[in-house]
Length: 246
Image (cartoon, rainbow, N blue to C red):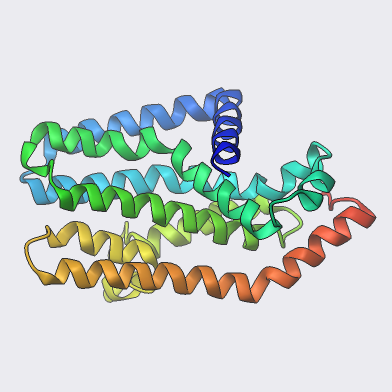
């Protein structure tokens, strides 16, 4: 299983390199966001909060594009039969791929925190390490959920920008409005931002972590139970009739 995960990480990385314009754009965006937080953060708390927002802002796009291709690529390259007949169950394959997508996004995740820690060395603490791990979990589960949602659509590429905007406006509150903070807590990203703001100074950070885990699990299990049968029917229909074309 570990070798399979490493193989998928390598494949994901090759895909990112193949789309060089996207890779260049993400690199520039990560660099600009890191430079901005390094120059403008007034204290360590603000810096780690900005780093969390920067990593999620960039990596949400990466994992959504990966989710869009998780199922489609098997039909595009004619390998879907091998996947379905392989030793690893379909659901587990999607989970491993989603985890690999989050790992491939590591530069865009780690660099903002490195920039924040360079400015404020006190951020090199267990709270920050746990926060970075939570970002990986959030992105991996998001990719898994989005895969099940997007594979239902005839043209997933059209839905990705709308899904991204929903996650950014609701989950990250990029444009705050009355009640936006409470609304963001319906999604894992809201608890992620709250954990970053807690600073690890009291038990509220521990409770926030538990809430984050619970919300991630609830969304993942809920989406799987709601869409798993339909997702398998979509795959079966595409096997017999050919994949839908936009």
